[in-house]
Image 1 (cartoon, rainbow, N blue to C red):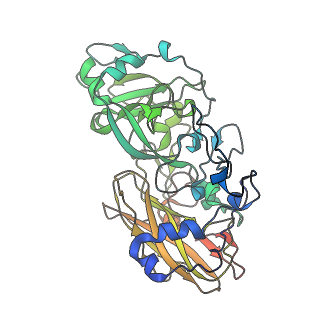
Image 2 (cartoon, rainbow, N blue to C red):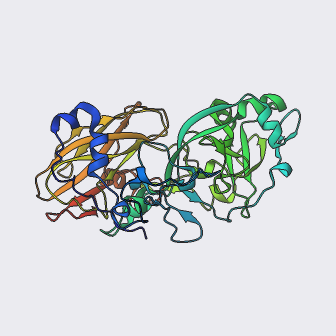
Image 3 (tube, rainbow, N blue to C red):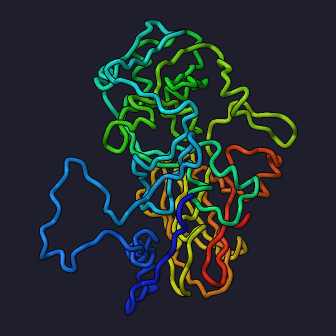
Length: 415
């Protein structure tokens, strides 16, 4: 479990002016006001005056400051949760990107790697990693999210839950690779081919049926992440990316695409990832992630030390496109105010929002509500229950809340 965070007071003599917050420079002010607890603890010894002591030599690979130590939460061998509350902007550092790996993380020699495209194609072909890199590449910034993200919220998460525990199965990276459409053009799509089996090289050989139309529209076989090669836990040497679709369709360690004229009915779309509806029916191929948001600071496990101006900040995202609006409430959803969206606001990417808030020292419940470019508005938990029933579990995108007590302690509260 991650250590609790504490929001430290501004230094004596400094003030957060309302004009500064409303002028759009609140991020700089909040950087002073919101200090991670780790940074406030006693750190490595440092000279009283660094200008009088030679610094450390430059290393071949850069390291974080010894005063900064964000870590993923790893309660079991399979998952790792991103520490959203410790990050800035929208990009997740590669080594903090969330991980789901049901069969563990395979070791793959890139010189032996091959992506086979076969089935209903004109010319079955195996592409090496070097082959993939020969094609014109594209780079796009997009989020990934596990379908099970926030699933503990509908079950009744404990008050001490943090945003990392509730929302940490989502991350945004800059991805580089070759469009799947380019590869399918090379092999030639056979008449009648409408689905593809995407299969990974992990011990569980995770596989999903993907409509060919999706692969052609914006599917990507990625080999780069945030300017470097994929990390092993992110699918090295190459993975499938399907913008806006649930995490496990974005098959890691991709080893083959087999085209066919119908879904392949794998275990991951029959025994798993089939979602119940309120009327007793089930949705078997639910792919698109709906609009969602989460306040990351202040959030569970933090403490606000004194009343006054504090910036509320967080992330919003949607698998259907751009976020167009985020609203923030401090009274449990009775009234809402519009937050500022921090540039860049990208399609199918995390969007950072900021909201200046005056805490009067009384009890408060902080919530955020996102709207995307399709007009979809993030629902409450009760609206989701009415639509899906009480046992939906996966793909929960309901509003969550943070209770602020009179002593400044922040805890999770069911919305």
